[in-house]
Length: 424
Image 1 (cartoon, helix red, strand yellow):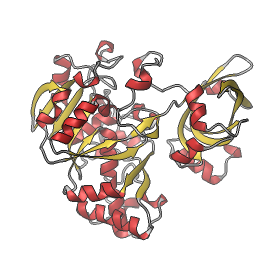
Image 2 (cartoon, helix red, strand yellow; image 1 turned 90 degrees about the horizontal axis):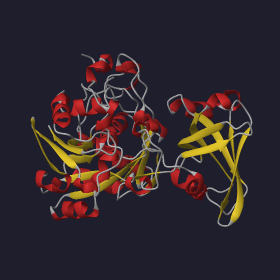
Image 3 (spheres, helix red, strand yellow; image 1 turned 120 degrees about the vertical axis):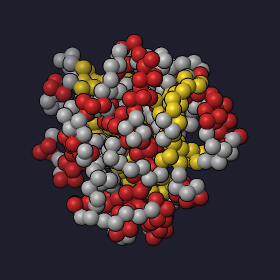
Image 4 (cartoon, one colour; image 1 turned 30 degrees about the horizontal axis):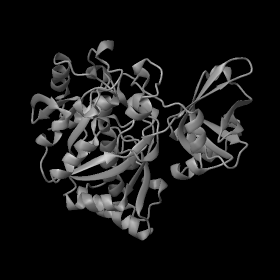
């Protein structure tokens, strides 16, 4: 069956509320580890991970850090409006965004939108011992220029342009989020964010602020496990993919052709490309976000094979690029992963860059042929989700064997649940 015509109902299983982990295991590396090795299924504990990995390998982590992206404003009428930061709009660079003072703009999802037809939202609070007023103004379609409209659509069609202003030039937007933002834990936890989530919903290696959801496969790693990875001669490297709320977006269409993926921002540094070449463009991916980043690199390199003078905007990976055999229906001949990575390095050289900055909407589903990822560490995902499609593609359709075992052996599911190591 053509990938676009996959019926999402074929990727369903019964997930009872009591199987969803509301809080993580403590310590985090004591979670269970399901093992899928060449069709055989078993289990262990996560801190024994390296017992099941080759000694010389490359393991790639997503170093993104979850931001306190939920902001609440109360109108004079009493209505509570939630402004959920999705991606920076002005400036678009994440690092610059968090350093801004006085004004910035974000693409946001709005909770209780029907109560915010117009006008400015205000919130007063103290920071650094000084009173500060933060305002939020949502721009309507008629107020947006073409570039701004394209950005809202690019984000999945559910985002709104919101301008933020505050009356203290000494305070950065990062400090504002730290003071009034709320960490956005997954909606399926059905509970309020707690102070402990600020620690437990971050990986121990998180560095780069920008995600609105954690790369949850990494939540099981501790400093001890990372040290064990190093002792076994497994080389660690990092990419950045800022996870969007689209990771929780259910597939509502009967066929996945009707589902639109959100675009997500990625950064990969030169040394990572060099490391990939050193290891034959084969990697152990920690989490589906690392998978989407690594596999997107192939299609960026493929595009550069035929468009070496492409701009940064041209390198965006579209949702169906892997399946359309070239963009806009134009057939292109495939290349090796090594050639794709060399093409990106040449692009960096030509443009005097130390890192690739791009974005991806890639959907990985049965019919997809993996290019770089050879082993996958991941949690257990929601029924009828794009992440379950990704796992099925990786296991050549054998996902039910994994999930049946997990359900029968008391594994905990979703973000704070147990882990698995998948080796096709």
